[in-house]
Length: 441
Image (cartoon, rainbow, N blue to C red):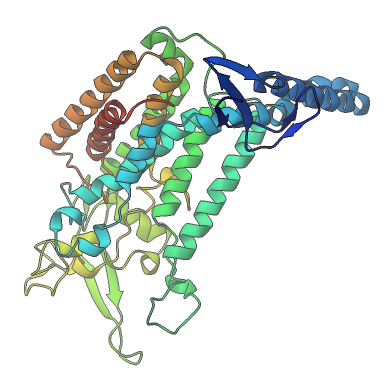
């Protein structure tokens, strides 16, 4: 017998009842002629899906004749798993996997003190580390559009998205809430009075959740996408959510009045009274470290004792003689230098509700959704690149323009300019990787 090769497939039986395992079926190749033993995978999948679907439909109809249609509809999510599982294994967007790998912040925390370029910016401005969070959120959005491109049961998809969100929230609370005390610390447990409720994973979790709900529930029916206008009609409600979130964020950031406030720092011993610092504000629309609406909302809702105790602005020139790294306070350091501040706080968080993630982070996820929609609906690679580059370039230009107009690029506040510039940069980098690495295989 001539040479042979093995390809992936599901277990099936041929006409002679000879089983070929899940490792694959054998294609016999003899002088360019391939003899396939048994039925094709597509035929097997169709027969299996048909048998399962008919069984579930008959059972649902017997129990409740009026609900047979809905039962058959939601059961299609189960019957389609075997059909799509094979395709999902073979089809991955390799460029997205490469982008995800490049975004991993492996060396930021370890090398930040040596190389300031890979440490977070103390306040305004951008460094390499400041691209990591929005790049991950962008990737989450692209992945969601591919995951939910064909939905058979929205309720089931919502349940799974909710479960994943809760897992991320709990994991983030465990990692950054104060449960871990370091390798050389023998203490255990958590101080509830000083637990940090917010964090990186919590922000990603709720941004993922809101974007997933938008993708599951806020898109039109099976409309053929043949132009930008038709894509806007199909996903118009998602863009409306992005516009609403941006409006709420800007209204709160620039519209809320920030009064003067105080905080205290415990002294070396429990007997000594804490030292009290006063910060004078009485302003509106300030985006500096001391008097911004983000910090005020966090202090009012969470309490200052639950905020992050090593804020990035303690590395500014006003607060550190080793700036842009941490260091001793200068002699004329302002009173706010030692005040806690949470970069993943509430106005960075949505709707002033506890546990919701960043408003503008959600918008970054929705931008990623749009890029994923282009993959789903446009098959020509040149069309995809064109539809990616136009919004990417526009977002970068808009972000720079807003920065020049006074809305600075700022990660702790997750400003609109920061969102636009980093989302556009993510799109441009993704296009470059897409061109270099390849396409769907």
